[in-house]
Image (cartoon, rainbow, N blue to C red):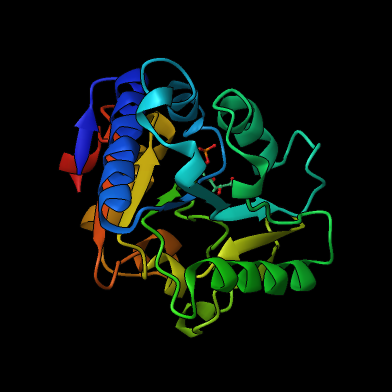
Length: 239
Ligand code: 6PG
């Protein structure tokens, strides 16, 4: 776990880890595949990646951008994770449109999930392995759109699922643990006091992925990094 002094230091850490993965992937395979996280935490890191000096340290023409989850809304919706990434990163970094693979939140959820899984296989092969999967964590211990109390589909080997998030009364599209855990590198970023209790529970408490789905993130043959700020880490010593 990497603990940063502030949200801005955390954002810099995430952006620099992203660039380190870009270099490793381009050296090894000539292409970098990444699944972006949604929510609000990663936005600052995306903005850093889209600005000097970091923008030109990446190679956006050899980067394939996916999303680890999406709300079932149109891309122009303020709720859309794609929309947030478009304004924070994709547009200012001038990422070629053909390199951006959007989950179609506006479509039928099950159809969109299957379509996205097909797209991932078409781009990465039958055993898709992302160079980097970026995730956040909710105050309830969810990650991507794997919510507490959901069917234990993480024992399923599907790649992308449509889930109904009862708490939100909304459908979501999400990577499954099988796909997440195939990654070479997973970064879970969490910041703020509100995340402190759940971070302590998932870090120091028992393994209960049905209650805290983020605990099912265990890359099979890859690296997991938690990037957190001091506020989110403030209760780690107390459990
Ligand atoms: C989403 C995300 C979700 C997010 C967490 C944390 O679609 O909202 O994928 O899993 O990462 O809810 O969200 P914040 O970064 O806004 O706290």
